[in-house]
Length: 135
Image 1 (cartoon, one colour):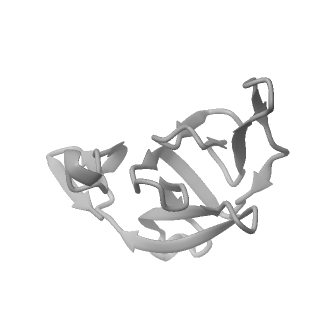
Image 2: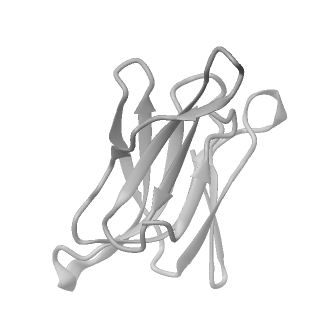
């Protein structure tokens, strides 16, 4: 993978996604000498899925969350485009697919919104003649 790279706004993790299927999440830490260390990859693969974009969602100091704009083609006659949220559980060192919402077929890009006192958090999904907000 490596087509898309997204980072958690607090710098705790990064997600690297391929166009099809593969997603890897790396936990970022600091050692005793204040050098950045990168963990072994945690997989969040999903078969029969094409990824259009991914971003890190601002959730404050909760577990890092990433949003990916995906097209599922398991059943080609009813292929849907979705925004899927992946959560990295820092305590268990595990990535889970938290929830999925269907979006317009015209969607092509995702941008993260600031959270906390700076804004509402969530993502904006853009496409031809359409902008959607999801939180």
